[in-house]
Image (cartoon, rainbow, N blue to C red; front, top):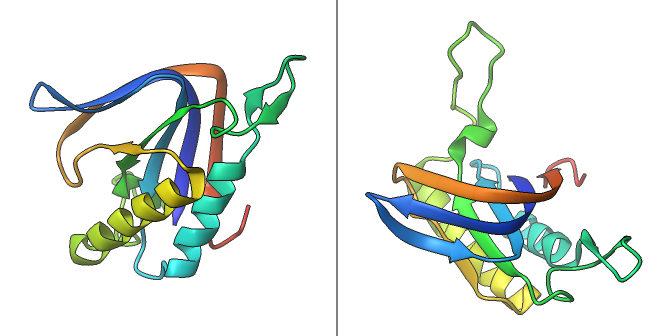
Amino acid sequence: MRIILQRVSEASVTVDEKIVGEIGHGLLLFVGIEDEDTDEDLEWLASKIAKMRIFSDEEGKMNHSVKDVDGDILAVSQFTLHASVKKGNRPSFMGAARPEYAIPMYEKFIKILEITSGRTVETGEFGADMKVRLLNDGPVTIFIDSKKRE
């Protein structure tokens, strides 16, 4: 499982000109699932994200988690995180899980993240043509891969 995590001042997801998910100060997560992902990957990532100290303390140092700052979380499914550009110029998405596997894993990840972080997690709409707006704070953007544990 791969996640692009961005610290944001605000973010929203629109589908068919209707906002389906919206947050203020917090974390925007782009979530990519592959067939090899397990419950262990979901739990490791949820724990890592909930505890990640990337919000500034009183001295301006990154010492606070999303929970510490009473921040919001928005998670958006994004199969393109598993794109391969090894051959040619058209990306291959063979590494991304099919919807019948990815949807239940994505939904389970959201539930685990809510429990782990103590926050309600806003979402996009799986498989929809989504328009994502964000105001990156910092900017802080972090790539996390559950297979590499980094």
